[in-house]
Length: 176
Image (cartoon, rainbow, N blue to C red; front, side, top):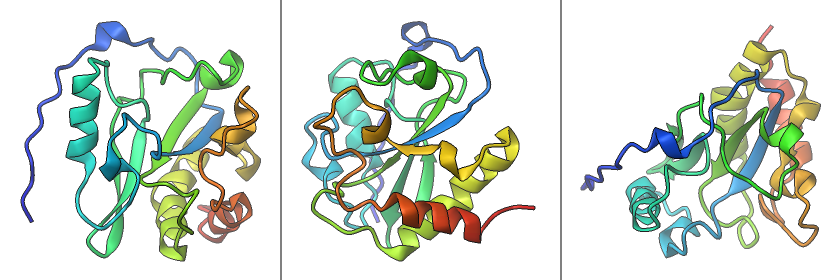
């Protein structure tokens, strides 16, 4: 595997600082991210460098998600993309929710592809459950972008992402 080196300039002055504890986890997909075709299909190749290149070309402060989960070879990996102390900028999400949200993106377009069971498992076990334990969140605090957006036409995190499966996986791996 050839790994591309992409050096993102650090631009913390362009981002707002989180002042409150997280109370929501918002799920997204990367279907419309930066007009990068490789962000639309999770094909098992390491694609995060392409996303970072897109952010750089648009001269943005950072990737607009705290975490991205992508399939690398045969399993799913979680990548930190924005330091947790900084807020993500989603003007279509009411500020009361957005200021207290952790944003997680599933790499790919789930309007056209059904997420495999392993994606739900990795998402719940490696990311959602630890945050739920740290911040004392219930599964009802995990929402799809389309559930909290002012844009009623939005399908993000995708037509085929089943939030009931997300909740059942979270309950399966609950940390006591």
